[in-house]
Figure 1 (cartoon, one colour):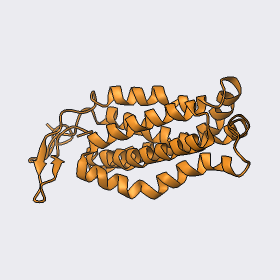
Figure 2 (tube, rainbow, N blue to C red; figure 1 turned 180 degrees about the vertical axis):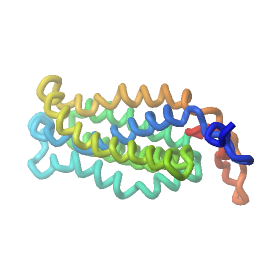
Figure 3 (cartoon, rainbow, N blue to C red; figure 1 turned 90 degrees about the horizontal axis):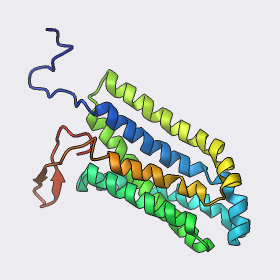
Length: 219
């Protein structure tokens, strides 16, 4: 039989669930990028209904973007220390709760605070998901293809935000630019155990418990 069908000696076979895991990771990145832009067309409604000033309402967008950008490296480090799957689930759950609370906000300060929490969640999810992708796909053609899908989802999320943000705001009201994240996060949380197995752990010299490498994409 050719080597195309069998892994080289001493190398583990590619995880058969890797493409399902990629779909999960791309959906995560799509949502994070979507949320950075989707509020643009809802800002006038938010300003009017919550009593923002014209300058203050810009923080509904800026609070999220600045938090994500400022904490990405910390989010990636947390994934290294505490485990990729654990931080992926934690970040997704936090994104779900903060999105729900953003939509329920009735005071400007509360909405901005929840957008900061959303940014923290996104700063955990994004580097964690990319780390999972890089460790799931071996260097070469498959990884390049996976990274291509990942990049396309980021661009698609930013573009889709401008397409769906207006109709959501006009037809259902501005809270739905945040509520739309809730079913997506629930789906991600429900599907993450399907795409992963139980992670084993090893203890480092410093006494930290870290996830051992396993065949699971989300270990």
